[in-house]
Structures are given as structure tokens and as C-alpha cells.
Amino acid sequence: MNKKSNCLIIQIDIGSGTQWGSKDTINPIRDIFIPSVKKYCNKFHYDYSLIKESVYETRYGNFDFLATKNKHYSFERYFHFKNDYDYTIYIDNDVYIFPDAEALPEFEGLRNVREPEGNSSKIFREVNNLDDSYGYFNSGVTFCDNLTANKLASYMIGRLDKKNRAKGKNSDNMLLNEFIIENKEIFKEIGCEWNYMPFLPNSKIIEKPNFFHFVGILGKDIINKLQDKNINIEYFLKKLRKK
Image 1: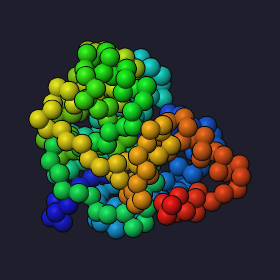
Image 2 (image 1 turned 30 degrees about the vertical axis):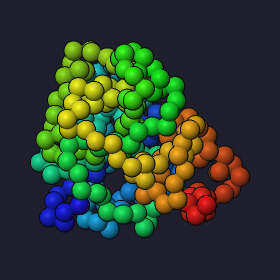
Image 3 (image 1 turned 120 degrees about the vertical axis):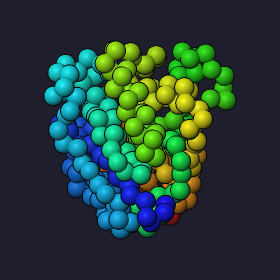
């Protein structure tokens, strides 16, 4: 990314800290994963914001837009996408960034990583009458330029105001994929090294990811099992990356 560009990286840590985790999951997220993102920002001189208060709760009160209360916390990002930064990048708090990760790539518009083929992608295509060429993209790492960040924020908050929920699974991830359908001209897929999800079925194995995502229930179960066995999570990640 151009060194003259100003970039904001956003994460969320409200309440339990993650929509899928247990109490055992929270400590590694706060002690290892979030600090890894902060170190990355310091290394490349990106601004960083950790959201700890719910704008949604203050403005709307009831957590009645998405399927569960905790899913609303992922939605919080959109209240912070309207800003003056050249680029806004959102990263889930269950993402670990390796110390030697590359700087953010040059891009325009919206960029996300395609999820491995699974139940969510099938539901998405089915409810939207799409053929198999359409991917289902993970919202856990989202790259936006300024115009796109503002457009995406207006779109999402507009749907919230109208209670226009996603088809299929009632999640922020499904909403993002509906936005992508409607805005194909500004969207481009990026490589899975920027949101590596190896614990999902049908995942493609790569040698040197930048961002490692413990996505979903399975990812959180692995975090907890590593702790139960007293296995250092950063050591585990380094060994896994070398295979």
C-alpha cells in the first residue's frame, strides 16, 4: 500500500469478545490475537481502533436485527466505516497476524476472501437463485477504500433502519454477500493469505498466510483444546505455518 495513504484498521471487543467463543476463548483473543494486530499496525504505521462500546445498543436498544445478540457486535463495524481515511480495513478479533506478515496490498473498492465451499455458500446461492460460479465471501477481513467504506456503511445502516434482513442465514456475513451481488463493479476477490481459514472443510492449504482466522465454532474449539493441553498457541501457529 502506498506509504502516503492513511489507513484505519478496526476491531471489535464488546462484551464476551466473540460471537462463538466461551470464557476460555476470550483470554487468547485479548492476550495474543488482538495484540498481534496492534503490532502489525505499529510496524506499518496504520491507525488502529478497538471498539469496546456498542453504538447499536445506544441507538437502537433491542438486539432484534440479526439472529442473536452477539451477532450484532460484528455489525458494529459499520458505524465506524464513515470516516476520512483513504482505506478502512475490518479484522475479526479471532484473527492472528504473523510477525512477518506483508504490508496491506494495493487495492480499490471492496476486497474479501472467498470461503471454502460449504453449507453457507450453498444457502447463499440457493436463496438468491445464483449458479455455482458465485462465491460466498467471508466478512471477517474486509478491505475498503474510502468511497466503498462510506457506501457500505450507508447500505448496512439503511437495511438496519428498515429491518431488511438477509435471506437465508440472518447474519452480517450474509448481508455483506448481498451487498457484493448488488455492487459487482467495485468488488474483487483477494487471496486467502489475507484471511486464511484452514479449519473450515474444503479449505485450500497454503504455506505462508499473513492473517490466520480461527473462524466459527470449530476455530474456537481448537483454541480451547490447545489451552486444555497447555500448548502455546503462537508456537502452534508457527509450526502449522511451516508445514
